Length: 307
Image 1 (tube, rainbow, N blue to C red):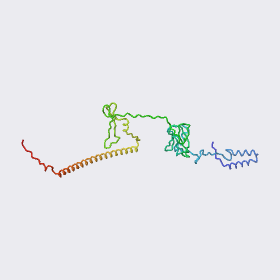
Image 2 (tube, helix red, strand yellow):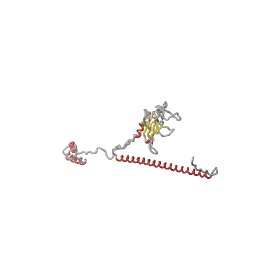
Image 3 (cartoon, rainbow, N blue to C red):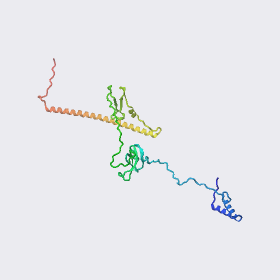
């Protein structure tokens, strides 16, 4: 039910008092009091009383709504004292070094403390290391306390045996049939890329070669890209063009290097030939300077005809 507007209390009181004054001469005090309460009732002759409804929710920052845009960091202790942990369990996440790594505990680059061995967590202080720092350690026995006494023997988890790894048997270079067990084919060019090297193994049938499966897998170039994205396609196209240009540049450099080696070899051959010629000329001149040993030059006699 909707109420009409509530008028000022002073006006209502004045109207009630005037009505009571008019009826005071005719009636007694009880009648007068009843008339006053009758005038104050809703729907009376003097005024109409109405209630006004206000907002039910506070405004202007009265409520503090939690910000949901940030990701919770979930800092604090993850393991309590005397809790059993295994290597890798997170003990405490923090910003800064509120707690320092103690016995058998490591610290990550974000100051997260984690267990390095399997054991029980201990929170303690070590005045011998630092008077104010708090440490978290891991012990092997639950009844142990940290820190250990100074110069005490280090507690280690013993009773483990080393697993002996037997090396594989060496593979012979020549098979029983007399052919090599491994054939390597290198790529083309002066400096072939290791990616172009193909290694073939002799099969069990002793007459055919085949590449190993893991080597075949390395030859497959898988590129995951978003199909339909023009920007991604252009990026991969530019990368492929750069690779092709790099390969062409390498081929050109190899060609120039081979041509230079051939020219150097020809130049070296000409120089050697010239040096040999100079050596022969010098020997000839030396022989001429020494003179004939048998009294002159030998003259060749003409060949006589006939029998």
